[in-house]
Length: 418
Image (cartoon, rainbow, N blue to C red):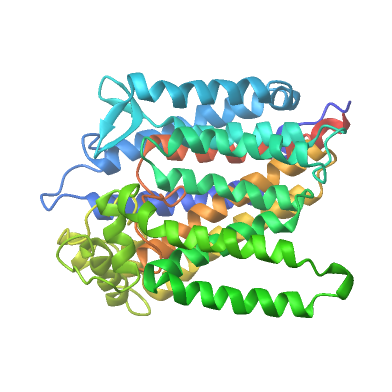
């Protein structure tokens, strides 16, 4: 095993991009939460002051992560995952309810959200499982075991209820597909989403008729040896059952605010003063920024407080209004660069564990980034997914820092040629 220096082998390009996003995020939190009555930059009673403290605490956190032996993360991955599940389950007994969600532990005035850290734990557990030489995802039993790792935290997060965090975990299915999970799992999920959205827009019989036509075409275009009329019939029965169940699920399982958000997204309701207010104001703020923006601290929508929760889930509206289209492109470009860099580093790893973990890191950052911006510009329902390193909050900031720097530690060691 080589005694390599973490400092000399650390991927500084990733660190620079991370730092740039962190600084830009804080500047936008500062702008969106600065009171009309000017106070000191270091007012720790304001959101920007608290976020500055959270950022300062990332420094010792990074030092600790980079100081730990890279083998630690693989050796104790299962234990870390088990602890994360216990913490998620403990919320039902000891969690603090905020805005109808029981997602936080409260320690005095400080709150921490375990679902943010559970993403790293799940990524480690999945990488540990898939790095086992005995694991072949062509085996149905192995598929079930791998999927169980992904869906255990989802089943604990959904009842909190926190559908936004639960959605993030579905990105692990793409990682599993990369490692050999049959493609039909991905297609099934995609088709289910399409059918669900269609069932909210059209009568069930119309959707079933379309599905029957598509199934018949697929059946007839299949090779003679592969034709199986029984399998096609079973598919149609499952599709029909799913389509007819959508209304029941939508009316009885979804909460009212979730139903409202879907109805607004699909154009079935126009509620610019109620549920649709956030998205409408967000679109106005971003659109008003033009090409070059109104300038730092000059956003009228931002200063007027027209966009609720602008320092958290809607932080990108500040970017759009004050930095404009070009500034937004810079931010998006930095996120894309970080994701691509992590993927590149993942491909050069010497062990399957670190490679799989790297893909999990890239996937988690991507789905957060994609869903948040899609939500802010009104092409995705509001479900409370923060923008990594930008949105206010210590749990999210520290969780993304841990997630990324564990991987950078692995890469710095080149996994030490175990």
